[in-house]
Structure formats: C-alpha cells, structure tokens
Length: 199
Image 1 (tube, rainbow, N blue to C red):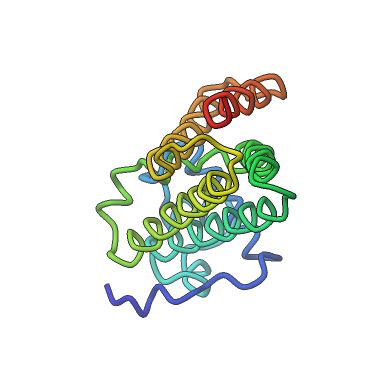
Image 2 (tube, rainbow, N blue to C red):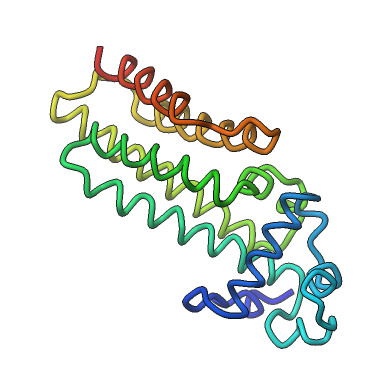
C-alpha cells in the first residue's frame, strides 16, 4: 500500500473523527489491535461499511489515525511537563499527566506491543517508532538538564529514560488487567524515582 494513503487524516478531534477514535479505542481495549477492522468499526457505530470508506480507505489508515492521535496526546503531555519550574517539577508533571492518560487511553500498550502493528505498513511502524522514541527523547532531555544543573546524580540518562518509559508502559498494562493506579501508587513511583535520581 502506498504511503499516500497514510497522509495525516486527523484534523481537530471533533465530531465524527472523535467518534471513530473512541470506537477504535474500545475495540483495541476489548480485543487488541487484531480486532480492528472496517467491518467491526461500522458494526459498533451502527453504520454501513461503505460509509467508513468516506473517512478511511483501509484498516491500516484507521490504525494510523489512532496512533496519530495518541502521538498528539503524548506530545501535549511533554509540552506541558516542560513548563515546570525545574527538571524535578517537570518529571512530576509528566508522571501526573501520564497517569491521567492511562485512565483515558488504556489501549496504549496494546498498540505499542502488538505483533499486528509490526506486520502493518512501513508508514504505520515508522509513526509508532517516532512517537515512542520522541517521547523517550523528551524524558532524556529533562534528565540531562537535571544532571547538568546538579539536581540529579550523574547517571546514564539514556538508560534512565528507557527505564522510566518502560515503567510508564508497564503501569498501563497493569491498568488493563484491572488494577487502576491511584494517587498512592503515583506518589510512590515519584518518590522512588526521586531517590534514584537525587540521593
């Protein structure tokens, strides 16, 4: 399939696009990425399959749209986090916003870890890779600034960024298993990380 079919399809998320996103989110949460199809989306929305094709030409394009919205949300989290007064405050904002995102988008690890994604089109895999690596790079930038300012211990910021990203993704998977992260868990995560970075 041509990459042309994967041009940016998400405008401001409103109206029908918001409905499509919600339905795809529900399918991924219920059945994983493999459950997403134009037929299943049409069934859940109560419309005909040809009506889907006015918005998306294929299943891959629907998944591309879904990952694109998640990418926008992650970018928004990082932008807001970097408004913090210092790197430690930025990490606090990052964790708080991400735990909120876990509650709103519990299908995130299903997308990131799905074999179906890696069997999909090159452009979809590229988008997911750039999304995750961009988020990891943002975390590393915060860690690097904290180290340079003497706020954090001199640790390998690349390794620490991978560890933090892994912890965030694993918390999302635990959420999908029915254990919702509460304020105590979030505070415990923050305190433990602070001990590693600052003591």
